Image (cartoon, rainbow, N blue to C red; front, side):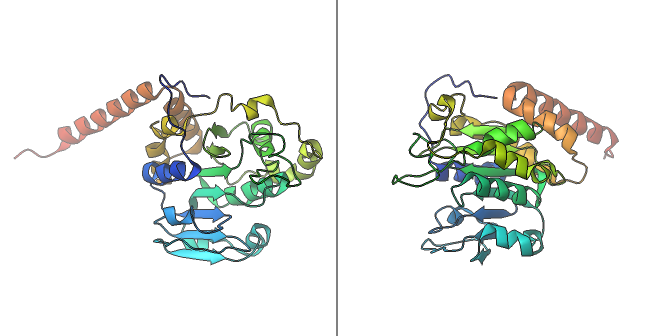
Length: 278
């Protein structure tokens, strides 16, 4: 899936995209891996879990936050974030160790604590050069080889919707249509590492460097998918139908909105028909 913007748009920063996701998705819970100074954590106003072995929060936080000064591997090995959050993670931002295998494990662990309608954002997924994508850091700006996680998700989890987004500085990938019961990635982990782990210099595809087919952040935020995902918490909302609705909301938003409007009008008509007259 790729956007078809009619006019050039200003590239959003990763924090501007996150701000838009908080506004449009209206998540009830938030989880973050890689806190640093709290620049992304401060955007949350809902119960949040933040994991970083060396955080140094300098930003003012408005949310109720559980900070965990530990590695993400150790955290998930001993802790269920849902117990503190009071429910599944609805929005997650992964910006931890900039190495492919770490980011892959972070996604595996986070997905287990989500619902199908949750949203996971992975940072640093669109490096601007081969040097920036090196496993051994030798540049000021550094993504590492985490861009490979998107390839793994597309190959091993075609049920997921994997959306590269052209944010500054180093791009993100937004993942929709999660399945917390899936064990495909964990069961295939060793084979995935053997297949995708490469020594430097990294063979970064030209499509990644050029951000070919990447969404503009404003275009993605303007799609009607976020209300659909917010409603996914309702117990009668099923993943199989939700996946089809995600695709339509992204690919044909006008048709999706027409269908939603017709459904609302049908319900309203039924309510009026049974409402007592005075």
